[in-house]
Length: 298
Image (cartoon, rainbow, N blue to C red; front, side, top):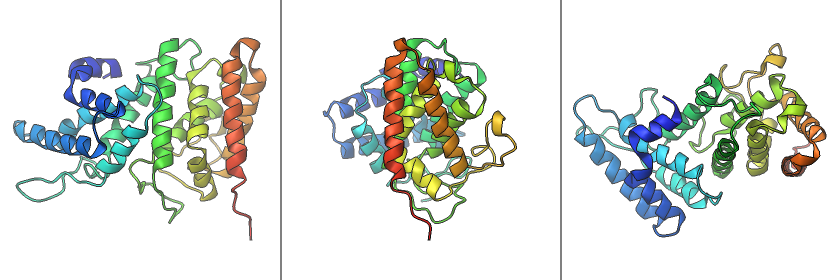
């Protein structure tokens, strides 16, 4: 189901969850109070379901509301990110068995924040599948471009705020639920690895989105490169232009291609695209900064 249909079906903007998060970002509710309200309300909702009701269903409205609000407000996402940090300290527990409640793929609610990843992916899938305008389509509605930019700023800031331990290059299971680096990787693949012409890139939401990833989560993405972070075959796959490279995640060769892609996009900007050119400059400047932290070879 397309995102806007989900919003209408669930009446998200009229929900108590949406109103709670509005109050949170406006400073009218404390993070701890918001977390406890969500925990209580979600568990009450689950218990009210008929047999067959799932924790995924009970948990969904919380994260749909957070994501939708993030795409509407100005980009002061600190309270929402603090809420995620606090919520993931808890697990939902079945009152009759004492067991932690999990989604169908085995993720814990809430410590793995499975609904955050699921609903962000749903929006990406809408754009990839054609249910919504593709992120590399220069004819995307300007308001939709703004929403896409805000979504990427939010999840990039959450990713940068995550605590990641690089214990193994192959980290299919992310060790901090707020780390959505693989979604940044997805955007970079679309923009710079699928053969999309540089002269058109400056008109796309895709370029804007990856610039914000590199501005807001540049340190995290570069640390992923330094540690050779890899993903499963789907998340880590290369784009069509580089299908024979065998990439599985954040390879240094791949990073260099992305950086060159940014430079090419900047060079292709015309005079009316000065704001985009400035954004690319900010991304390139942050890349230069984070790369100064490269670990010297022994």
